[in-house]
Length: 197
View 1 (cartoon, rainbow, N blue to C red):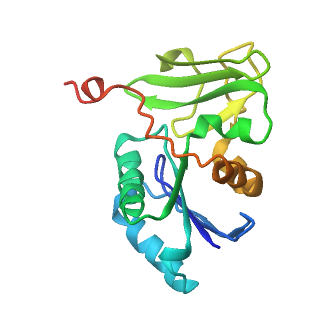
View 2: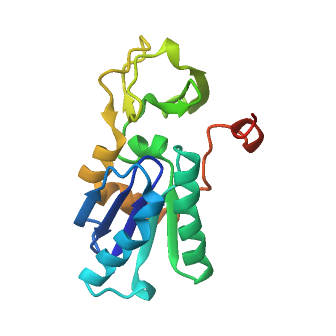
């Protein structure tokens, strides 16, 4: 059974996985406006391999990321779920734990002058999420990544989560599938905070 993967949280990644969750195709489109191409990209991939949506699994990233991008992916996920398709979703900041990273920090640009930080320690059973002023960090605007370094706020050598998903697909998607994960979208802020003028 093939699986489709869609991540519209930061740009647009669309991929097709085989029954063992190995990539058949993986496209990081670097698209700034995923809404303009997402349906065509999905259609072209399905058509290229002559696949039937009724016999596929669907995996989505539930964030965090761009509010509009997350709503785009979640909207498609909800339509597929209404059609009784196998829909799964997961959070980028939890991906390192799927491949056995027991502790670390995950950070990304949270927009509005803020950075989102998630730190975890599975051995201690702790985790913490917070929004911090971006002036306190050295971070690229589009980074989605994690590090084991906890002694400073210099996250310049992050391991990119998208690369981890691309290079460890068998482990990551097998875990999400086995656990039947369906995480709701994770927004950096409440809707009132996001749209407050």
